[in-house]
Image (cartoon, one colour):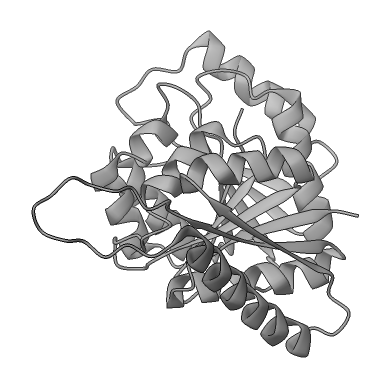
Length: 273
């Protein structure tokens, strides 16, 4: 059985992402892991007394909120298998550990729609996109789960996409039985290289049995072009493949992430190389 990991800090943004993850789990016939990470109190030398919450109280409160969330989800989705995981430490590090321990198929996190990530989902989300072996879906603030009719794959084709990444992408496409729109993010000022041409041909061959089309930008602003493409083509989910020195690296630079989150209302699926 597939396992979906939903990370939460119990904020409204996180609650929405958990709702998305639970609906996805029901659709995919997967089990759900609800994860909460919390910081370990560190005593600081000071002349002013500081009240710290005991470790066991933090752990108990974390599990209490997870159980309340579990009850809410099982009432909504009877039969959904849910496991609760509460960990102390750095959130991104603990999520990576849980992914490895539980062999997660997918991780779901939330992000605001106004360029401001919630406490859990700011730097942790972008860090996990670079390090996670498990594909990650980042859910905008108001996005709800629905079966995508069309998925856009944004690619810069600076190198051939590894087979294992393409296979994960194709698995998702077959699950949804959706169409694929491959969006080439080459700037109009860039020249087409042999490497790029070879990467495009390789992907074309890999997607041969799936319904897909290739599209090309007309401008030089990758983020604006991507947002415009999403709106014009009724895209339900954007797929990105982070790798070094690529469009995706630029896309997830802090200032660009804010712009993307502000204008994108669809889930972002990241499949790391």
